[in-house]
Length: 306
Image 1 (spheres, rainbow, N blue to C red):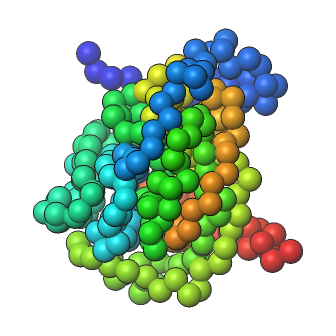
Image 2: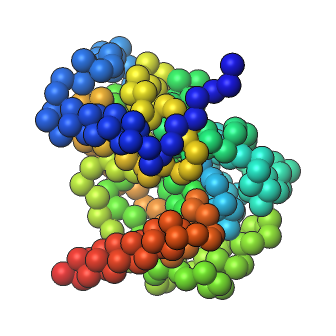
């Protein structure tokens, strides 16, 4: 039987999404929607050389993913074991070529875990996150975005921060963000072909976080295996006909009953970019989304200078 594919802009989807946000905003008991995470007493307090799984998604962002994978290959962790999981679609041939290139690199303490899915599944990020969480054998699972670079001993520092911890959710206190690169910028064009790449971090600026948002969600492995990622929230587990705006991180925190515990982790950099590869290149919808994104970035720039 064919898998149901929802319309990200359909009325039924919007209604069901509104119902979930109402439950989250009203702080209804999360246990009405999903079983709570296992109590701390039943979570392992791992020490020593930890195993961290990083879960990323890529659709038409190979020129950004190249920087993420290169950061692992050029500065591999020494004190932790890493599984680098990337969900992608075979229809995105640039990403396929990139992943094939890195699969041929033998990097100490790093395992490349390529996960190919129909693009309609990749478009709903929570599906892959949920699948990876339930199947992971790692001590901790980091749900990340493919435009994040992990430099300067970042993962070894994270491993030290996580020694003996049982928190359901932690998050790095800060990252460094790039200027907003326009299409054609040399920093983006340099990664168009599969290769090891690096970027000059001098123009990146610090951004602080107060909760586990988006790409800053790191969950305990026992919690991941027990709860998945919004596992029982149907609206987040349906394939969709176009990239669904990522809203599920707030629901994930609500289900775990935690905004996250801050940890100090250096070396996290994010590449900001004007053109969104997940939208079609042509059409009124794409142009409107691009203009909205420009306005959002301008507003964020203004607020960060205050």
